[in-house]
Length: 260
Ligand code: HH2
Image (tube, rainbow, N blue to C red):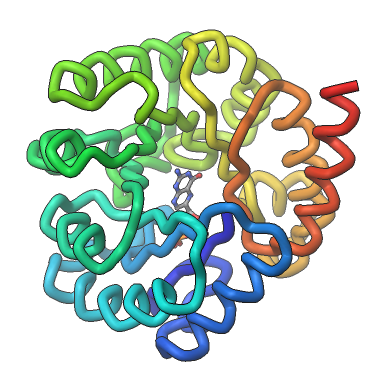
């Protein structure tokens, strides 16, 4: 899953892809390099990011989604917590919804995915992007995240989303310390055993910067490669990444070893 952020403030690629033509060219390049899904987001969810109203999110998203839809044939996911935004994105050709609030932010989101018959990514986040990094504490982070995703998947199914249209994500960096992120990655198998495909988003995140002493997100791709390979070894099925050409090779090797 290649990342395309249409935001002025994303932590790694903020401001880079707001122009529809450039965004479409970048999406096409990611697909040519092996991306099977392109994830388009128009609201940053980095810690402390300012939330934007749906009109602003849509004004950023719509022209880019239109251009990207023309440029690539792979499924497009829309990274949003708002049903109003997802509805327009689906009408513009998006194929699935990536909701970092797992349907908690907007009560209409799960019903929308059910009636539109589209898959949804349900991600664990503690609190909101504004509050999530305020002293995160868990008795057992792995058990908490797995129980949360089991419960959200059950809610999604009650809303009419079939089992095979649900994907889960531990939410690396969303209300977690370095140790929490590491424990989640090391114990990903516990989440895999829930029976839903698992998405992992580690790309260039803060915990990699901490481990490698790299403040600049653009310099975190080697650390990202290690985390991606280990996530695959522990059963992740979809990897959300910025540098698709590099991570395609990482995935080719890691999946070959896992499948051997
Ligand atoms: N991480 C980010 C955004 N969306 N979606 C899923 N399913 N999993 C993730 O780990 C995830 C996500 C944050 O990264 P990014 O999009 O690069 O930055 P920003 O939120 O600042 O736009």
